[in-house]
Image (cartoon, rainbow, N blue to C red; front, top):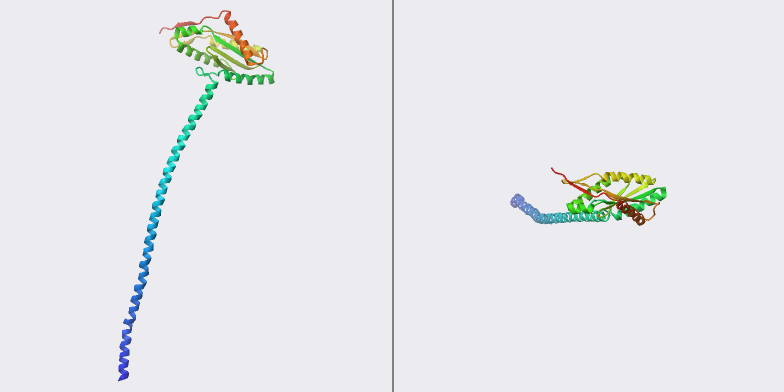
Length: 261
């Protein structure tokens, strides 16, 4: 009987054992879930860090774009300043070598081209001619029609003078109504005389300014390198003297005809 009772208790204990054994499993499951909850906290913190880093990166991108815009504007302004400076330099260089009214080379450029032409002529045993010309009665044009008409006449004459010479020649406005033509690489003096006659024929045609036709002539003098000298100033003086000599022989006065519509 005792054995039976004992076995009965044992059986009861064995039947209850699964229930007792199930409790540690529940506690174990609870314990297993707790680490998952604690692991979710670092994940949330990591997301917040990423959001902050993203926000910082976006701000840096915006700042970089603003700096790029500023640099582009500064670059554009710098380009404009460089272009303006280049134009100013080109204008200054042109003003130092060309006459503003007629666009012809001035004395400075004429001297430079003469020196080059004389050096070539010395090597090639050729000649260089300087033709000095002055308009006859130009003052009367200014008196009768005004200085604006006189300036226009000089511009028209400069265009004709350029059209009547070779591309290798140089027509220069020497001052006022005085012009000098440089004729390089001449084989003989006769070539310079032929060029002079061609220029004279071009300049002799009437000039039309508005409703006014102007007929004006030019007195000319010529000096040849190296026959008449080797220095620019000496040749200019000789050609100028020859021009005044021709003018003293009776230059044709300028005539003005007002055309009626």
